[in-house]
Every structure is written in structure tokens, then in C-alpha cells.
Image (tube, rainbow, N blue to C red; front, side):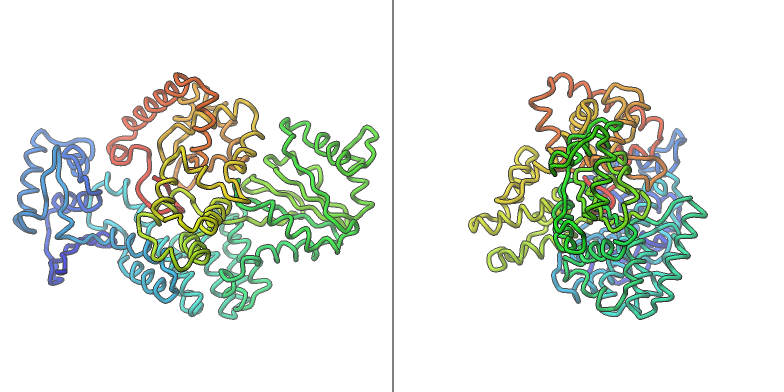
Length: 609
């Protein structure tokens, strides 16, 4: 295949011909036109959006004629077939031009799918080398900068993080320099600090790793007033007990997190030990908690853990009495009229271990803290960041696409072969690495020898079939989500069902308030309840808070709504949401028109189609 010319956006804007010679485009407006076309998808860019990109919000009367002149000059400079005319606009001929942003995404996706560590490192390294500086430098368009610059910076961060993780398996010391430089440029990016702490610890520089954590913590507290998140705190815990072998065993030893949970319980038993296992529905919290409880139970007086669910506790104010009363009944203990005191007294006397499952609100567990001496508490919670005295938090993270493909390959290595890109994308987008969903699918692959990859992809792509596709002999993903749904108050259930009909990656509270036909203040309370239940995810990385419902969550919401809500109710909710979105778009200006839901294309950690 002949070498293609290239358009480079990840640094100073430049164009190179097939021989690699720079092509000079000195006119700024022509650079804007070509950059906009290179950033667009295969459908191209409308003339109106090109005019907005060139002149922001005030194009002159002759703007359209001038745009035609720019296109004609670019065609003379780059070739008559370099830019093709489409209805209402133009599209770049991708058969002739390779765009560095597309190449980066291709390398990252290929690296995530690869099962060979050296190949992953090569692909991520190549992706990283394509970043030459600040994206879109030399493209003087406010619209393009606002719409794309931050997205491209996040793409660079994603490439660096993938490269660093692979590099640390081969030579952790080689990752330290690039991570130091990146963390200085993005000082509030916790994931970079966590990787730097890990790289230093794995290189035998334990003191530096702990000092690095303290610097990051002080910076976050001084600048933002927040404590480090679970990822950075976990890196510190690894450094405290670090060895290079511990880091290298991360992907090979799936029980490593459970070992740390068990260590935390035994280590702090004398003062009273408490840990929280967090994650969305289906993350495997209960399984991990029970495995840990079984392992450490000999260290606690009762010999076996006592388990109670907060599931029936819907009224927050009644949480302590309700949970305590049910626990006393289940364990055959006397209730003298003050169930909270009775339970805590019995707990302290027996020096036992309690597993509190299905927690969705801080009020359901805070009455058990601090834990009595020589007692233990394991909390399984969908609350994103539970807090409490002497409470150690362990977050269950989703699988990467590489881990999903690796697991399926282990289950049926001979017949699956190479997983096609289209199927890999469906697995990534729909499953989102959720452990229960991944293991349910792996069980089906193992139990159904004739089940083919294209059949799996077809079932997962259909919103009405995907939950059925994730029901195996021992795991039912629908049941995980159902359990969280039924813990909600009725207004929050209604909100979840109606918001599940919004076909967007994410939404803000203005759109949600319109869909639910409620004041924004009330909607924020409902969404907070959905976030605590793990059914809605909050994203505060941008200037405004946005929310999203996973593909599997959306399928459940629509499934329940089909037999619960009148069709006219949900149709009206969608129409109101669309009107609110349209109003947001008009108020937000031209950049919002390029990405109507306030999003742009990207990979799983940042967004979903």
C-alpha cells in the first residue's frame, strides 16, 4: 500500500506529502478549514460549521463565497481529490491522508486488544510519540480549540497511562521521567501521581514513592480541598508494603486486593477494624467480602462472620434501628427495645466480624463506627467514596478490554481465535468491564461450545436482548441491577426509568429536570440517590457536572419502564429533554453544535457512544 500524506494536529499544525516533505499552508483560515475536516468523522463538516470555526460567531456577508475560495486553493495545493464535496459541506479524502489523531486511537485500541506484552508496549509507545506538543497549535479557531483541545489532551493522557503501565512491567525506572514531567503539567491528575508512586516503588525507591504521595496529597488539599481518591491511596498502600514483585504480580494475581483487605482487618483488629468494598452493581463486592470474611474469621471470636443486608432499609432515618432489629432476629439475639445498643453490645462481647451488604447510604453504616476493639466490619457499598473513622476503602475496578479478551481466550482458547475489531468494540462498549457481566459471558462461552462471537455481539448490541445474554448458570447481571433498583424510593425509581430513555452518553441536571418535569433542586436529590445506588455515574472532570447511565443500566431501565410506565409518559419525557438540550445548544454557541450532547468521541474511561 502506498504511503499516504499526513495531517498532524497533536502539536504545531503541519501537513506532509507522501515523501514526508512539509507542505506550507501559511494562510490561517485555510489551516482552520483543513484542521476542522481532519478532526471530523467520515461524514465531514457542514459549510455552516466551517464558517463558525473560521469566524466564530460573526462571519461576514461574503463568508460563504470566501470559504469556497479557501477550498479551491487547498485543492490546488494538496490535490484535486484531497477534499470532496458532500451535501451541504465537505469531507477529507482519508484514502489520501492519514490523520495523527486517528492513528493514535488505532494504536491504543490495538494495544488494548493485544495479548502480547511486548506488542502492547510497542503500540502504546508509537501512540505516545505522535504527541509533539500542545494540540492544535497554529490553528487560531476558538470554536475548534474549545471543542477539541481538551479532548486531545485527554487522549494524550490515555496513551501515556497505557504506556506507563506496560513499561513498568518491563522496566519501571524508564517510566519515572515521563510520569514526573506529565504530573508537573497536570498537577491535579491523580492517576499520573498514582502511576509515578507505583513506578518509584517498583524501582526500589520506596522513600521517594512515599514522599511523592505526600506531595500529591498536600497539593490536592491546598488547591482543591480534597483528599486523594482510591487509586492514589492504593498506590501509597502498595508502596508501604512494596516490592517490585508485588507490582509485577498485579495482573497475574486476582486475589491481591482481597489479600490487602484481609491484612487490613487483621492488622487493625485490636482497635476495631473496618473496611468498605465499593463498586457499581455487579462489581463483585459481596463475593470479595465473603471470601475475605471466611479467610479472617478465625482471628475473630465468633469463628464465623455474621451477615446482614441493608436492603430493606429504605428510610434513611430508620436505618440503624431497622438493620439492628433484623440482625438480632437473624442471629437469634434478644431485642430489649433498643436494637442498636443490643446489637453493638452483643457484637463487642462476641468480638465477631459483621458483613453489612447492600449499603447505599452513609446512614446505613455510620452507627456501627467506630468498631469496638477486637471486632471487625466489612461494608459492601455502592456509595462512591464512603467515609468514617478508621475506615479503609477498597474500590473494585472494571476489567480492561485486554483482560476481558484474555479471560474469554482462557475459557475457550482453541475455537475463539482472534476477536474481530467490531466484536471487541461491542464487548468494550456494552460490558464496560463490569466483572459480573464479563464472568457471566465467560460462563456462557464455556457452557455453549457452539456459541459464536458474532452471535454474542448481535445479542449484546440489541438493548432488549443484552441482559438475557448475560445470564449464566451462576451469574445473572439483571438481578444485580434489579437489587439496586428495588432499594430506591419510588420517586428515584421513576427518575431512573425515564432517564434510561435518553439516548445520549451523558446529560446534565438541566436536561434531567426537563425530562422528569421537576425543579432542578429536587432532581439533584433524586440523582444523588441514583448515584449512591450505583445506577448513575457522576462525572465532574469538566466545568459542569454531568451524569451517565451505563448501557446495561439503560437496558434495565427501559425493560422495567415498558411494563410500568405509560408510553405517552416516557415519550413526553424524551421530548422535554430534547427541547432542553436544544435550548442548551443555542445558548452554548457554535462549539455545542459540533458535539450536541456536550461530548466528543473517545475511549471507555472518558465516555460512551
